[in-house]
Length: 341
Ligand code: HEM
Ligand SMILES: [Ca+2]
Ligand SMILES: [Ca+2]
Image (cartoon, rainbow, N blue to C red; front, side):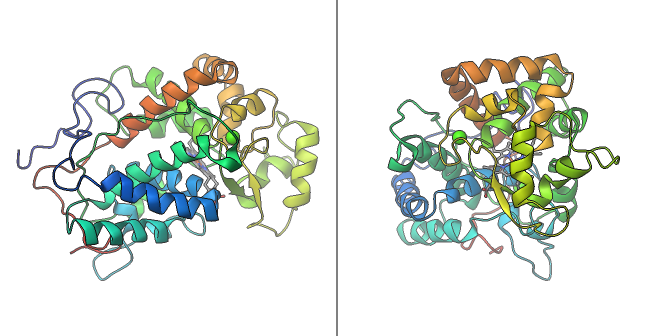
């Protein structure tokens, strides 16, 4: 259906319902797609477990700007102002070489068939799955996995402005977060409630793995409200530990795990840490302290019920992956994820 792009409005919520994407999209054109993705991921993540976190985040930062269209992968050119230079991405977002490697293998197997946007979605899912059952994450079966709708096409454009304005900042208040998540689905009346739920599921959920730079949490340690005081909701012992990695001046690029209890395992420990005032980012702690009853309840629920968190996270990832995909004759299938054909 040329030009027919349902985006992710229409039915359901937050991308739920009909998106024009479907799991068996490459069944005939490139049946080995997922195997190729997984083989590259296995090696990359064995070499550096953090890569799984970086790839999960890459998909998120793609989807929040122009939808899940691989706009984030485009390098600067005469016509493109790369999203890689945007505040939330610069010196922060990573994993491009792994995506390039997957793309090169897929181009060999099935030329110009599998989009870069789908590779990002497959890599995010594959990374999550691998962090639930590998040796470094211990024996943990039954982690989140999901049937992933495919068939996204790649954008011909990028939006540096969009990347600066749509991706939430770590010092966000709960209201900022709700606004930014709602922006991804303006046609939904019930979105405030749903995005509250969504925030609980994927923001914090995503932060069960990976790290953050000192510059993203420094304000909480030294000057939360402009009064030279630390964030009162931050656990004292934890805060003192953080100060050693993140001094008042300098050290901006020093890193600390988001979930210090299990940084390379996909699990629900980060929700427990938030209950105890040991969430690293302000944007995570406000889910508990921000006076929105629904997010408070969700943090508590997921802290005690890991199975429920896994299944909700899986649903939310599908919903996020359905944000405004290009389908039909829109966009293109890039040969190289870093540039337009
Ligand atoms: C409330 C919304 C969110 C905010 C404010 C936020 C903010 C951040 C920040 C500031 C960092 C550290 C970046 C750095 O220091 O360079 C980070 C890392 C990360 N975020 Fe989020 N994020 C949000 C939602 C999400 C979502 C929806 C996901 C995925 C589903 C996600 C996955 C990750 C991961 C995996 C990392 C670690 C990346 C790595 O180690 O390379 N985040 N996030
Ligand atoms: Ca995008
Ligand atoms: Ca964890």
